[in-house]
View 1 (tube, rainbow, N blue to C red):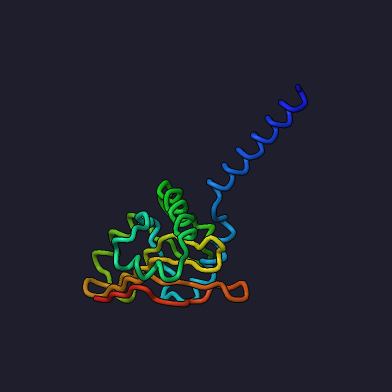
View 2: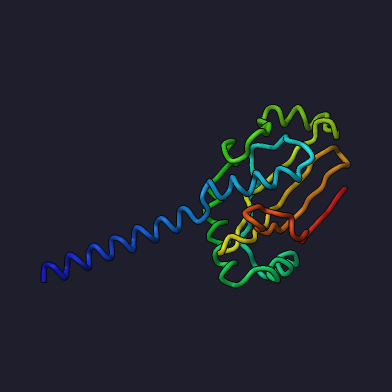
Length: 175
C-alpha cells in the first residue's frame, strides 16, 4: 500500500512539473533568437525600440484574425493564446535575443521622435507568435520613419530548411 501511494505521489509530481514547464516555456529563448536572426535580414535599419507592444487575445471578431485563422488550426490558436498570456508580463525584447541591433532607450526615443526622418527611422517589434508545431509564426512589425512615413505589417513566416522565410503578409498599411 505504501508503495502504491509513493508511485501515485511521484506520478502526480512529475505531471505537475511537466505542466508547469510547458506553461512557462512554450517558446524557448533559443527559438525566439533563431526567428529574430532570420527576421533581421528583412529589416531596413538595425534600430529597434526597446518597449514591445502587447498582443490581444486572438478572437474571431477581428477581420485580420479571420485571415489569420486561414493559416492556423484551432489547436494552434489555443497554443497562441497561451503564448500571448505569458507575453503580457514582458516589457521588452531582451537584447540577447537579437544580435547586432541598436536598441533605442526611452530617452533616445523622445529625441528621435522630435526629428523623425528616414535617416533615424526605427522599428517597433512584437514577439512572434508561433503555431503549435513551430513551423509557422506571425509577427506585427511597425516601421517608423517620420510624421507622414510609417508602415505597419502583420507578416507570417514559414520555417523552411531551419530558417524563417517571409511567407504571407496578412495586413499592410502605410502612411
